[in-house]
Figure 1 (tube, rainbow, N blue to C red):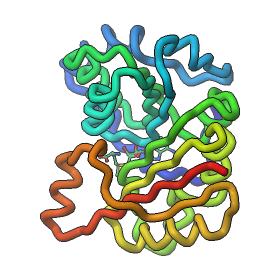
Figure 2 (cartoon, rainbow, N blue to C red; figure 1 turned 180 degrees about the vertical axis):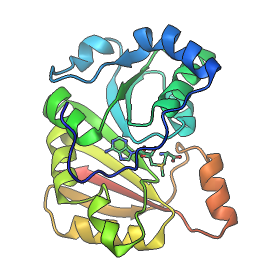
Figure 3 (cartoon, rainbow, N blue to C red; figure 1 turned 60 degrees about the vertical axis):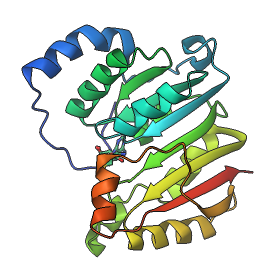
Amino acid sequence: MESRAVRSYKLRGRRITEGQQEAWDRLWPIFGIESSDQKINLSELFPDSKRIIMEIGFGMGEATAQIAAADPTTGYVAVEVHRPGIGKLLSRIEELKLKNMRTIEGDAFEVFEQMIIDSSLDGVHLFFPDPWPKARHFKRRIVNQEFITAVASKLKPGAFFHIATDWQPYAQWIAEEFTKQTLFTGGEVDRPDWRPLTRFEDQGINKEHPVADFRFIKS
Ligand SMILES: C[S@@+](CC[C@H](N)C(=O)[O-])C[C@H]1O[C@@H](n2cnc3c(N)ncnc32)[C@H](O)[C@@H]1O
């Protein structure tokens, strides 16, 4: 896949521990999906699932794995660019014996464009996207019109897009970006019970970063 000029992530080290490498070698062939320009047949991947939800930028996969474990009748596809995080999620899939989770290594923009069939998803999760606090980096914020349009095209009508952020200026940014479009309705909601409190969020709360949850519905 070709790389985009402006990326929403910083390529951190791909250094992986011996244990993570061992987990990768064993588990990637079972739960990983290679990036390609071929569309994935999601219902073939999850034949028994009632819904299919994609998570973008899952980090170390803490919330991702817990959500999938608590909701076994939904198929989860988790996309991340950070290989050590993918390795960690693979281990969590094994530990929790998850049957409803697959992971893709790649940039969500490219994955949407090349691998996901239009109107095929029941939901998209985006938890704590990189805030890119400096003005000169705002163009790297993943929530922008291009991304909103891409997510909308992959969601079924009535499907949801859930976003959480602990960075107040980003929450305002998200609210504003959604006022510029008509593909979704919705806005800020109470923190949902199904979204687990991760270490990351807990630290944020301790630092008095209020968390904002948004839920948008595809028209
Ligand atoms: C601040 S971290 C949050 C991780 C996790 N969601 C959490 O709540 O702990 C944002 C993550 O999004 C990933 N990311 C950013 N842009 C991405 C993209 N275009 N495609 C896939 N992953 C992306 C980064 O690699 C990073 O791991």
